[in-house]
Length: 572
Image (cartoon, rainbow, N blue to C red; front, side):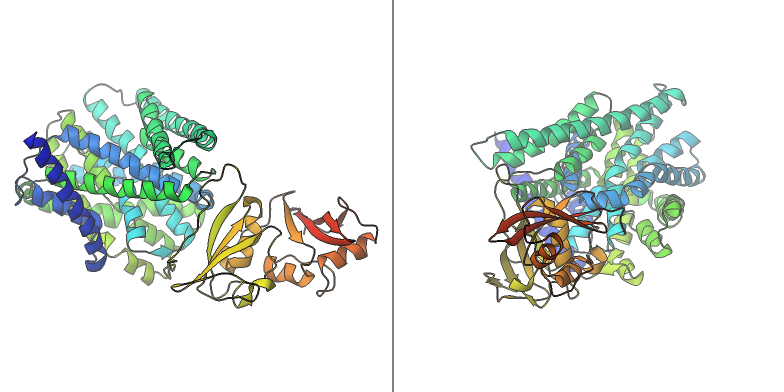
């Protein structure tokens, strides 16, 4: 029992040190993963802690579970609009880019370590992928914002290229041990991994969304647990069936992120905490496995491999993969420099050790050293690179207060937070002057440390955090009112009808939504439609104006109270 008590105490101390290290990381500019690794190294056999730990199997198991939790959290937080924006280039980077990187680094490893080609390619495959935990950590911990397409490409690539690196690593080991033929069997192994992983992840995500929204749980705290269990189910089911568990858990998270979830904010907070615990545990445990005395012996060759990986292989692979997608040279350069390495290569480096390959310890030491070099060289300089390349955006201000609808099963509404920019259409207008769609309500305005109850006379100022209660079907219009010009949503969904108030003026349609109607600007929709349809106007009457179709939805005392606006995206 005493040993168990000491183990709990040690785990608590390491967890506290890891959390404190994360705060220190943002102040001193060191990568959080490096600090976690250092904590593990100090606690290890050659450090002051003196903890003797050498179970690569346990480290592999803990690392796999931790990475699954991190990828699931990343999937949950993936904006579907960003996913669609960067899906194609990210997919090419996550597959072809990984192979190209491994081929270039493998060629150097043949010359540097005098290894046979297949063993050199195994080493290169282990370090070929970018790390989701590292990329997510740098974008969140340092509050760094870059152009949306660039950030989306890096995040989606980092979360989706792990399956390719795992495939290459396992395939190389299988060929080295004679379990796979370097031909059809390897190709079939790849197809099975990706197809089953993607399919099972999608099926589990869709099924979980249905279950979570229909089940009635007595404790609200069980909903985040239920959502998390769906992610682990996706991973386990895919891996058991011979597919990629990492791909499955990420896809399941993306599918759930696009679904209506009860207690969504609580779900996000829960999994954000789990992801942090997973990072701390994973990096600290991997730090326990390292031996500084062994790292010194591989310093020179590992630096050569790291230099080729960061300065040659990654830029060439990124440039070749993104060439068809018209990324600017500055964007390509940033994405190339943003190929951070983290725990995934170290976890993959335990594979040769578990399979008992000769020279496996040297692989582990080289990979560990390369990850440290990548983290220190790239992580701290990434914000500077974004600024020098002209890609960095101002940090988004954080509201000191939030609102949430705790359950979404019975009502078709959600709370959306908007940060009012200088060039927002809503900036400097009073609430009563905002031509919001019918049924949309401003629930709260936060200005600095002050919470303002919205009234008609309340002026919306740049920097305000505006919390809006709306139905998902009208969010496209509301995005235009509170968004900025470069992020406007396209009004291009055919036959989707938006409800507008009859008191909305023609001028406001163009001012807030960019919709032009050939009519006097001062007229309201009520006056416009009564002039076009006559005094006998009734609910259900329609009037077409170019690509616009106006439908009368509610009439009170011969006045049009509510109008449905549908837009034909094929019209001019």
